Length: 288
Image (cartoon, rainbow, N blue to C red; front, side):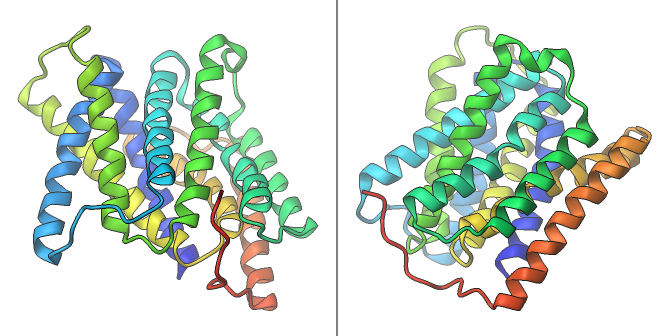
């Protein structure tokens, strides 16, 4: 169940990434973050009313605050990176997140990560490099911001796993509130009044991103972060499929080979998880 939800969330990430890169070509990153938060806010408000849920966050406020700050930094870094770098380069950096998640899960959550899982994660990253073929721009100063964003995302996912007892609605809602506050602070600098269509598209980015994090947050409440991390690589497969369907981008030999490697690493983890019958409901020690 956790793996299926995580895969669905990552699939939405591919659409979010492409649409976000398209919008920051004409608008500032801060402006996009503000308007996407407005779009996501409408969804969260409707869900809160429908479910009768509260948006207050229980206990461990320092972890909640750190998570919001990390995810706000992640959003800024990703969109800033796509403004300056090819999408393939930014995605390559973000595909380092599974390695960071796995290492942090072992150190902070005390999850057992054997050499088989590490091997599958490294194999998947090899598939990412083969599929995306990052350019020389991947070594530019802007790339450091993208890499910092990947690290922020990874650590936020580990904290999300730690906060598994908190309902997913306030968790996801507050991360978009944080992004909205950051966007509101920076939007006046370089504001460009969007057309009605562009405003709706930026709000749509928020709705899609909200869907991503709702699915991923729920998945992390059901399964260990180190188990789910390698399935982040499936974003490359969806990016290739969407590029082929929408923009008629050819599926090159490198993309096909790289995705085959990624799929094999994911299938190995699913096979091993079922064979070992991993207990995904094991209580976790909180991060101090």
